[in-house]
Length: 84
Image (cartoon, rainbow, N blue to C red; front, side):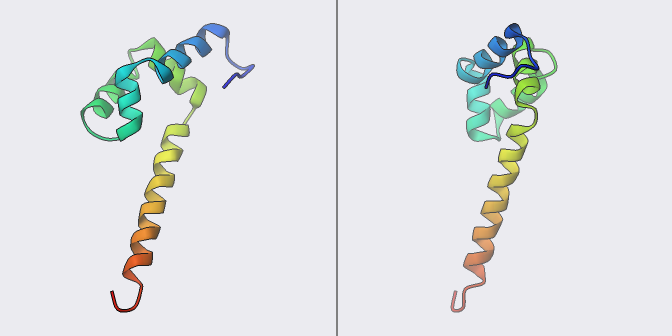
């Protein structure tokens, strides 16, 4: 995700965090649990996590909310069917 607003160093750090950091990858996959907690604490200290957050803004949060809305819609659809 190349963006003119960020320098090359920030983009490289964000790319590392996204593709090579094991803890961050696990955190994004599960979005809950141990690794998610570690990454949330680490975001303020780790320069790679800070770069990822800066470049991707709140995409991670939007994705999580979208997943949650979909889950709720499916549950409502299933429970509102007659005879279930």
